[in-house]
Length: 109
Image 1 (cartoon, rainbow, N blue to C red):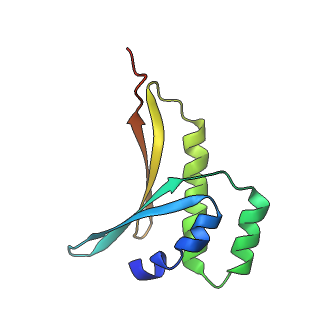
Image 2: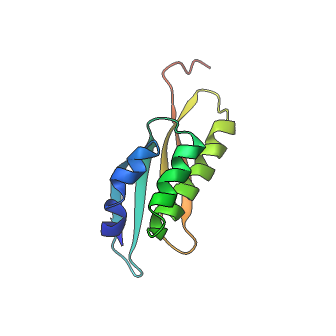
């Protein structure tokens, strides 16, 4: 499964995200987490065109939709002294998306 996701990295780059890390959880059941970093904003029309051109890649559509929802959420959040840094996508049914915020250096309380 992680191999299939890793193969999607060039397409995910096109929608503005860098697939920074793949993490394998070796347990029962085994699992995986993909860590994404937002690199740039890409307009909706471009994203939809990429998805249409690759409509046979169901995993791409699932990942992109999850990233879009998480990105929309993080844009609405204002956390004093913290900046958004990464998305964590835990693979599973249902997939789980987490947002990571890091304290900025200007955090004078």
